[in-house]
Image 1 (cartoon, one colour):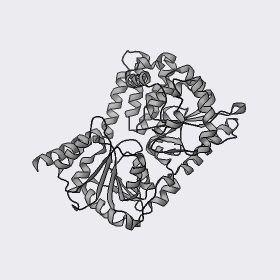
Image 2 (tube, one colour):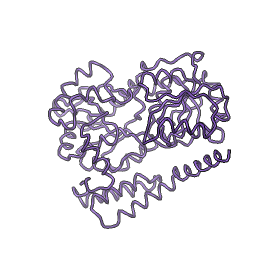
Image 3 (cartoon, rainbow, N blue to C red):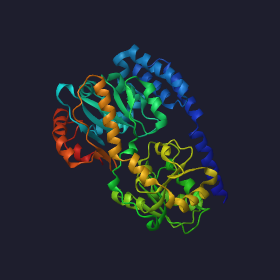
Image 4 (cartoon, rainbow, N blue to C red):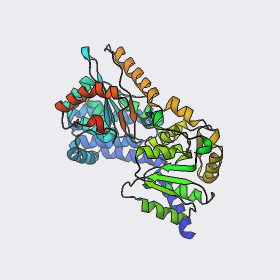
Length: 443
């Protein structure tokens, strides 16, 4: 009992400090101060961007963004020598070992009279692959709109600075959180955000929701096994819930944390349920379990857009999240779609949500708002409006992507139509565009 109480108390103190917005902003100011000391311009740009990335106070964004722009204008290409930037070291390692794009799709081929194509690239390490070679990046920007989809919030502002400084046209960014849209657009005048989140590209037919009376799982939690997913708070709440509760935890190893660690954590915290653990399941099996669940649970306090949350909604499960989570889909949780949980009442709120889950209208909302059909309509409208305003032609709409679990072209006819563009990109830049990208992008 004492060991459990100390563990919980320590976890709460550590998280209070880790997720403090004030401390994040103070950390950002420390990065700004570091950028004032003599160093290579590329290193100072890195530190300035870290300052902006950490800052949580909107009033400071214009001032910090202005410092970044001033630095870029003053030092020119020297500031873009990413090899001299400390924060780019890990991306440089990825570039050397795996230079080819992954989890990226070509949505439109370039056309006649300067009509631009569209490349949709997810995860910041893929953006880095795009911008690492200035000459190639310039050529890509001349022929394609680049849509950069974030994987975390806050996103990587150093890579955005490198991209925006070298781009000749608007770069479109898909934020993981609606709260970050204004921050991204304030960072550089060439950046414009999409109206969608990365979790908004699900195909409704990939999920077969069960009727309420046929849902035999009370709570499903889809995550990896890393601490930021906060299984400890779930297990602590389960101690105050019925021992016969039907719980499924689906996950995969992450950053050295394994299923054994999660099982040990359950024993430490004394959750009495016979939890059904599943590891590294194919996406179809995950969707089936989500479709059988009454409640989909996400307890992260900060991450990206957590596609698993939207997947649970598309599967018809009521979504439960922390009320203070900085996680994109929190914006979608209302009384008739789930519950925003408070730590002092988490067990009671979860139990109440299980009881009223048959009265929620989750699936209807997901089909209307989170489907690839609706999101591609928004993307086409935004790009079409932008190009027509610039005096460019727009005669062909983009192909429809879907996330399963990462982006791929949803329709076979689009894959056939765009295959020559993929081939041309591979022949021109074989290190960046692999021969099988059209088939491997969702892995």
